[in-house]
Length: 452
Ligand SMILES: Cc1ncc(COP(=O)(O)O)c(C=O)c1O
Image 1 (cartoon, rainbow, N blue to C red):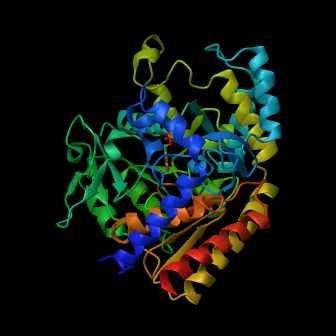
Image 2 (image 1 turned 180 degrees about the horizontal axis):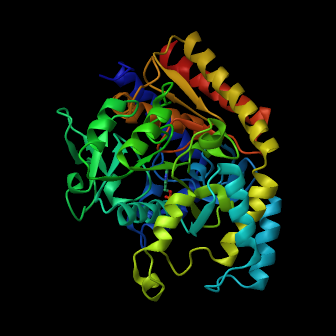
């Protein structure tokens, strides 16, 4: 059952927005028609097809909180490359460091001075002492899961129902109605049935986690400390601490994927909530968009890994990558962490997100929409249900693709970019009160069109 019942009205409203979009995007349309020849679906990667409207808008340039498309329209960007550009587009300090490194060499399979500085910065911020670098958060997740299986000698992992951790094979699993782990709908070409590699448990359910751990088969539990990829699902009081205790009791390695939850501050949810995982993963924005991922480990885990690695075979063990930790990535991360993603920047981003969230909730209340909004630092998202979801299944059940497409196209037609997979807004250090105001105006108009 959809939270918005008048589907005929919704279809009509959407059709009107499509007309408006088409009238204003002739150059994007031309480029898209050209791209349909050599590119599958007309896009360089299939995800880029998931935009509202008949085709994507083509970007001409971007800076800070805004970008301009090839038709000359300027947008406030709340999508920010789905977190890849959470630092804002092309921040000056990162660009300066990246340009300087480009002149000095890009990749060597040898470290530069930046590596130790970046490692120390992450250690200070997140509280884990040892770090390794990859090109993406997906790779960081894959590698830490391999290490976890390697040192525990166990072969399964536990993840949350409706989690997302990148294109990591073992994580494309959900629970069926009977509580069995099954392949996620539309899981493309899995090499084995995910129930062979994975046990799925609901978020906020310590009993289910303990039952999974008690099988003795579990090497690691990979979590986002708050779910952010099926809307925002916040942890109930004591849940994260309870998981920590259970992982210790059963010898399970606890991994926090902070790729998105970094929105809570310079040390993510881990530092802000004084949590103590065995490992932490991140990526996306830490290099300002230059490909970069990282994982940190406790001393204990590091020692267990190092004792069992054989130097002679280190390049063929399944952990690594030719370009991982390259000089350009490290220069980008150093400048981005130290000069852009500063504690002061996080304060500003969160304060602005407080305003975005309060405005959205006020308007939801004003128009009596059966929706709610949740916030996680500088990230906020509304969902089509009246109460905040407790787990991934509750959040997934509230999905309404057509309603989301309408709201996103309505936003786009008024100079606002929302994330295609979410009703989510992210604030960068470059966002302003005026940017938030633009969203508030669009949101009020959209609610009026639906509910007035
Ligand atoms: C929590 C989380 N972890 C990992 C990833 C993977 O990031 P990437 O696609 O950059 O490898 C994502 C991507 O959305 C994510 O949301």
